Length: 383
Image: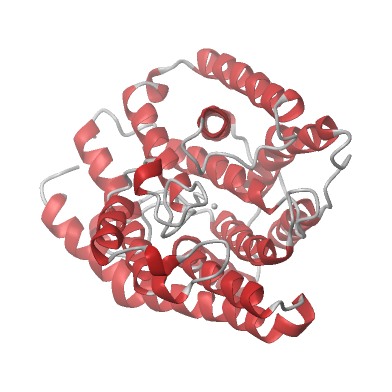
């Protein structure tokens, strides 16, 4: 389950550091959302359905990531197309996003055979099939049912959240080829239409939520495209009309809001699915754009908050991309030993803390050096 997903190309090397002022608080909010996603996924081991999932609406972090992505991309690139080519833009986004896609696939493959449980029998998967799955995941190529080695319907069975990166890439292409050219009024019309479509899917759709996009089924594909099209376009629109206001404590208020919105229990139960769909709609259409607006308006006023936001922003995308293989491992451990959350709490705490540490190590030892290398090789003569 980011986007996240889509941090700007910042502070890695002078070769691709943006010259515009940086939204430090938005970095921090993205990190809070990423940690929320980890906790949401952790509780999947104890849920029987979306109805009783704890941190019930953690899946909405992806929509927050998509809005952030549209806002950041629009802010960073909308006024640069007189000197920026589509090819150069796509290279920049590839450099920013893809190294961690590959790392997530490698980690997923490396611990795949340790994840066996009743829900998926990894012992039946041959080495060649695992290799094919790894290459597909690393290339962001969805696995058709015949190549879905885990057997639970994910298009990326080694690292489930990769699905949102596929949609992030689709959003990148839509922006480069189409969305950036739209006048603001036309973009607003598109946002309104996509928002109506997303609301209809959430409220009257089959699930009563928008926790979709991760599988190659008609409902998942439709829901995933609606999530991307509304949220990315809404973020882009917000970047065009944004006028900052004075906000104190924007990071702490915004971070708390993200946690609360994600932790709200399922609304309406299985009897009134539309109520939960309405809640999802309000989060995506009202609350998340407001949080991005407030986060972009606020400024950190003390060094401690600045450091917290920077750290959270730095690890947010790597954390999103490396944690889920360990969720599979944790799930198998819980199910194989029939553990309650209280019994498995040390393992849960180790997973969250370990994922954050691993994300930081991946950032410093792999992601940043890889992006520097790719920037020198691929953007040497690009604007």
